[in-house]
Amino acid sequence: MSDTEKHVILTIPMHPDMELAAAKTASVLAELMDFGEGEVEEIQLAIIETCINAFEHSQSDDQEVHIDFLLKDDELQFKVTDRGVGISPDTLDGRRLLGSPGIHTDLRKRGRGLQIIKTLMDEVDIESSPNGTTVSVIKRKRRTEET
Amino acid sequence: MNKFDIQIREDGDHAVIETAGYLNDSLGEQLSEKARELIKNGYTQLVINLEKTTLINSIGISILIEIIEALHEREGALNFCGLSDTQERTFRMMALAKYAGIFPDEESAIANL
Figure 1: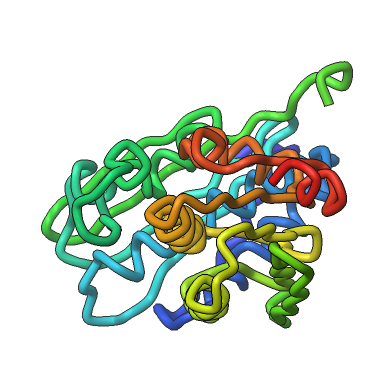
Figure 2: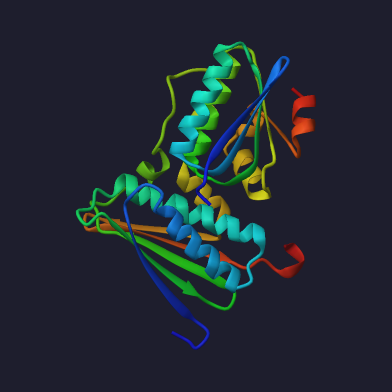
């Protein structure tokens, strides 16, 4: 790790609203890195969705989510890891299908956390095995004139 | 961040629901219940003011979609107002903007019902 890189490690229990602890930590780190206000909100939302996916799908015995933030000059990385049974991206993509079949199927099929993460972040990578899942996310700073 | 609240303002043929806090499954279910109650009482023109809503997760968005569907079944309408840029971007990505209006403030959201 270079002098300009810093790690922050956080473990949260899989308990309702604990994703807010991750979001708050991410918010503080992003603000320290001088991310713009909108970017901070995007990072918060992305880590919330990543944590909720782990809460809902991991089935881990320890019921914990481990988050490793890596602060670089121009980007914030975070890896969200659970020690659960593993999950396919397809499952992540369809985690909440709403209501009975009806008029707005295009609305219903879009209720997806991973879609939000991919849209708001610059890079998203999922590694999953029967021993657990790690979702790695990178958010790069926008150039000043874009913020 | 997570202090949530729901305020209802009924006015003539429309009603405004204002939420505050983190719109997740918990607040979303309360919001859904209030909306269903309003619809049952004949209000099919609704505005949801999200100005004080700090964060909205995908489950909260899914519940908003359910409210949109309930209103469309009754030929009603829903407009949102007070969204942050990120929230608006997320709503547009999730196709909510195809079925509900997005306006900067409550006044314009009501005027465009």
